[in-house]
Image 1 (tube, rainbow, N blue to C red):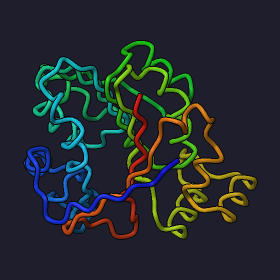
Image 2 (tube, one colour):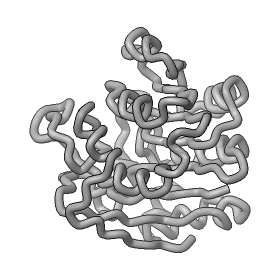
Image 3 (tube, rainbow, N blue to C red):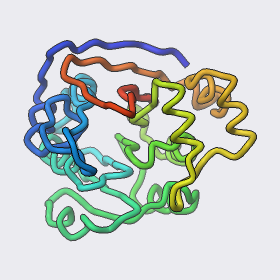
Image 4 (cartoon, helix red, strand yellow):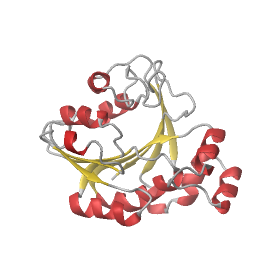
Amino acid sequence: METKTINYENKKTELCRLGEKYGTDKSPFNTRPFIHGGPGHRHPYTCFYNDIFSNIKLNKLKILEIGILQGKSIYMLSEYFPNSNIIATDHVDGMKDELNKLPNVTFDHIDVSNINSIKNICSNYGPFDIIIDDSSHKFNDQIRVIENTLKYVNKGGFLIIEDIMEDKNIFLKYNNEKYKKMTYFNSEDATLANNVSIEELYNLKLKEEYKKCGTFYTLRHNNSYTPGWNNNKVLLFSK
């Protein structure tokens, strides 16, 4: 899959402003503190999304976000896509009642480590025009999401995998880590990951039919801030 780099420098889009308003780390102008303490993370995703979604934001779309944490991105998407039906999913149900109060949002439970859970969400609510994965950031979970959601994306639609890591050491440490019930590399995965680049690992694991419509985008912004993660890259699939 091809890799492209976009440098937004100091650009501030409409979606960046909404991200700043609601405190989501998808915006490089986020000022909300990180959930675990310290300054908030800031990705340039809203610059990228504004570029590809601005001409369809008033359409009646079906949008799925996988992994919503405190729901800040859902508030942003709800306002940006006022005529769309947004499905917000997470493995924790803490934001269910609050998000279900929004007129164009429905919350449901998902477990990205479980194929059936992913398939149930897609079959119950799909097909979709936009799917955004912001769940565990674990490599095997991302592959599982791609393999089980892409067929539910409408023609002309998008599947976006956020938080593709750029630093090999961070990538290996995170994916080899055994934490609670989260997935991790088995010995075979770990050996393979040690010997190829991060992007090549995605290329090796994905079927050709997926790779034909996938592109990596390395996103840069002067206001980005992702210490300890270095994950300002996305994998975009266009149908």
